[in-house]
Length: 497
Image (tube, rainbow, N blue to C red; front, top):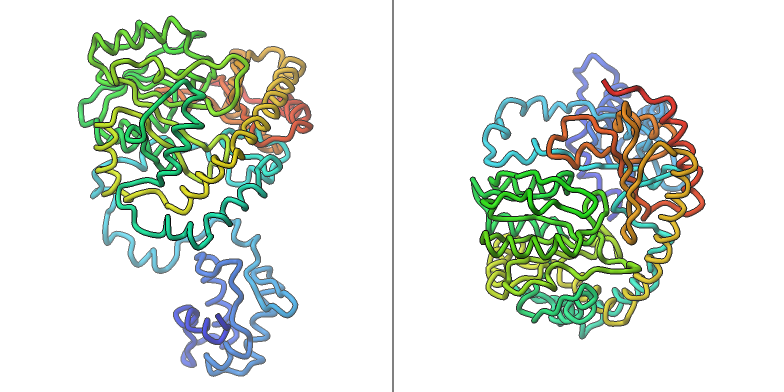
């Protein structure tokens, strides 16, 4: 689109009046600065040329040139040769001031008072928006650009854009999923976990969290009781509470969730048996059998999150779902830890009757996940790219985990780690007196990102001495120097109150 046509975008930003007590140049500068600080001009959007803006405002071109030059001198704008003037990105890193429009609307509608679920009151996620710019990103759930299969993924997307393929996915599938993707999940992903399912027992979701939200919406209501691990997956806890459920925090030890502590009146049990979130310990065989027996005795539904189970373990345990003979286990899977978290692709495996109900619910929520993505992922699986990627990631992450354990032993010997095979993170317990949140803040100042462990506990308001360190996005050679920096930060940490 030409800049002349784009000029309509700017019509509401410039209010120039000859009756104003300020010069035209000052009015132009004020209008641009206000728009920048209110985040109304994107850094990627060029401002109108001096000539076009002068014509639009009915002022001399020199007036606009002087206004732009002063804004460049003040750091609000940058001039790019033969491209024009742009907002300086550094200005956008500062907190935005309340806009005039927001001020005018304040008090008109109290949306918080009108809401029916308290989503914004739930614990916030661990967000590290600039993690990729940090020297030592021990971040969980992110990907390593160096390991991402760029060429293979582009190949599958090109194939999905072929004329015949577009005919397969462009139509509205209403409540169905791509049959090729269902086939690939059924044949390539599930058998690795010991699960053998029919196509009508699988539904595609927008990641594991979408799967949990659908299950909570369909099955839970006010007063439902969900037993779940403590510490445990914080977003699952919040999702269940948003559905009105009460959480029965159940302790975890070196064998996973303590099944004898699960209340018999709980209607649901949420577990991460392959690798417990966040300690990474697997649920022992004895506890698995006891969990299934208790669920049948107490008429409970087990929601199994295949947390960090996509990679190859030296001694992999089959999914709890593979041992299920009564249809009480609902399995939630995801491809976030292998392909890419931004793809948002997951699935649920359950009895055909439940899957049919979930399809009916999903149709009202989003009809179906984007079919072009489904087809691209189906092709990625069918061509063997995913299996090759899993082998590559498993080898790289195993090497990183060993290096991390060695570094912690050398530089943080007073810290205890749970070193379970497989997975993409390590759970650390520090010595008494450590406040993990204060330590994380001190480490961030040294370009080290670690995640405090308090958010994983049911009582997240209490400071803890636990940390989670991810290995999926940090290069092998950066692990040891990163732990050295963390140890330095720990030596200067403020003690817990």
